[in-house]
Image (cartoon, rainbow over all chains, first blue to last red; front, side, top):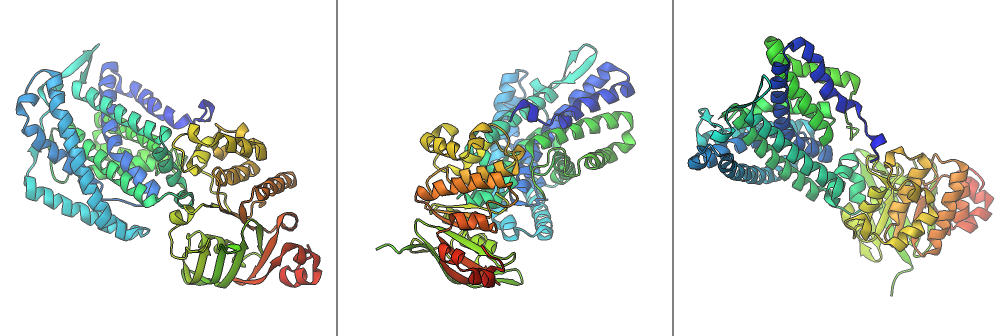
Length: 327
Length: 242
């Protein structure tokens, strides 16, 4: 796409929001701390939401059970990191990364495998039936939560940050938590890989085309259901990765954590435009920033603020900031 | 021995939900010719094309392509038999560039460099706009340019049968003339074409064979030249003279 064809207005929303709240917060160092925290939270939400938005865009499937992959990823991470105590307890960052990386990969593999079964047995029988999709995927999430309780127990489990990722870096007077920088970096890597795949590979082209007109993709000779299964599994794996990141962000995990994040990720994909990964990134960053700013400025409206943000965006662009489907 | 008809529909019925749209369509498309499918709005022309492509399943009857029964096949399998389809809405992927639209249709190519360059040159001569806007988003093209892209996409690799739904719809007369010239070239290349059209000038210029539909059935089939020469028949079938 030519640079002049890029719709820059949604991109401007993120810095615009950050600049608008600067005078309200007053202290630049506090603003910087909150902004980095918001971007980190946004990046984690993006990792989780990116798969969900493609699942909806490609097959018109409303998966309200996406949260179960988040919770599963986080709980798998408690087991993997728990078994690597020597590595997570080290103050050396590289040793921490050696522990966190396999935790991420195992969480993604387990969440992806569950995604494969979830698509086959829960989603596939209800293609094209939105009400049934909502009911059965929510039911699937409840069953998944109960299975997590059977395996790991119903209580909250601590998921402490590895030693080397704890603490803050001082930038001027602002304290920037190290883990938040890690979260931003991981989010950027995921976005980069997704953007490259979607724009530079034929599979990516097929996904983008399928989001716009899946019937035409089939008329060109491609089996879109196979593609959808692949996207569903990849989206589940990314949710598992997001679960690891979110669990480390919260430093504890509960079986219901997926359901708690579900609301945020649906706000994100609606703001972004259903089916748009670029839109999901913008939506996630806006949601992350808004949650942190209002949590500091007006804590009582923090929960309401993201819904207000979604309403404001939809009044401006009723199909989200980057609409790619007509649904 | 191969049949003279590349595509044959026998007694095809199609239901869409509670609606019975096709009531026993019999249609034979001769190999190497351009067959015009004519009829009033709502006669069942588009439904016939969609049923051939498997986008709607025939509830009764049979569809054979090159002697092979394709009635129950899924759309990707049907397309995989070297059948290209251009729907009425053109099916352009608006957010993708012209190049990316073409690459998707080139099933054997995984990147633009693997597309058949000689064939692309031939397509660029047929439709210069495709080359001119190669790296532009397809959604920014005009209606005529989109139609050219839709047809180019359908022929980016050699196909045995090209099915096109109303290529002249909504186009300016000058663009329609370009389109007629392009289909004339395509005919000469030997591809079999089934074309739904409402533009009588278009049909008369291009058609070898013709089938006329009414109320979900083929009510007349024969040579286009014979229909064009018989005003009484045109009047009774289409309510107009060609």
